[in-house]
Length: 372
Image: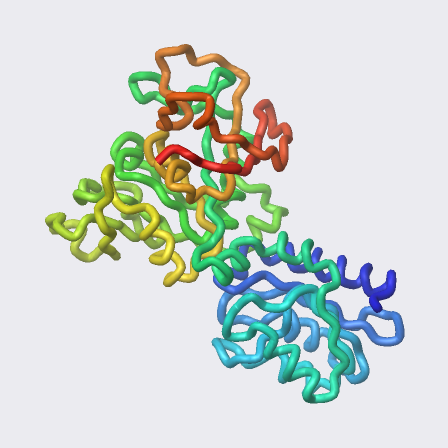
């Protein structure tokens, strides 16, 4: 039975876990607290890939962890990756009790870490604040359980639901605070997906612009990691010299198998996707990104690709920034998503609403999509 003290310590471990959300990928960001005789003796957060896991950070801070209780937000790993098994390290350090918020959904672990601890005589408990722990690492949990990470679309619109003038002009709909918020979204993402139409219209870079971040924020302190930029370009129309091809971040171009590869794209990372009725098969993109260990996938595109992703049932969330201005009925809509009847309307569960500078940010979850 967990005590109120156990709950407080696990809440602290979850707080530590959240600190790693901008730098731990592709690993899940985990927090660990070591306690002995009612006092915290060590704390840790997962470091960037190849670095220490949270348990190792906490053990190093503690120095002597004999007889301690370890509170971890995710089951300690039992397999050898870029680092050694954390379960073995806890046993070797003499930790006497481990309280895990949730079992690791990774099939390589999936209870084996807890079993290894128990076999070594460590008292093991699991399930304390499990729901909260899942919410800390939703992309990793989704990738392990269903085969691909969490997919969110970022959209910006005017008060009357428009995203660009008929001419294509769209800068800037939202204010500086909202644009800074988008940089935080990018910094927490493993991949940013866009369409070639957006590349041709905006010559976008889709990089994390750290100069736009609060330099005291966790996002700004997460180092120089840039998400993978993914361009859906069936006919390989991305032009030479496009910002999306810069060395500032890695780029993957997805195209049809029959597309002719121009000289300037021959050295660029590319992948084939099957053709669908309108463009590339979006569902096939998800396992491709999973092979690249993408937990958090952000879609930044025009209304056509965003609408197609919604229609395919691939969006877990929409993050919509609404600016207090009117752009008129001739401007482009938020989504290319034609509906013929109210029966096809997509209900949205409102997850969060908050003001960001002069704009408003809505985070919503599509409940069902019946249009095919």
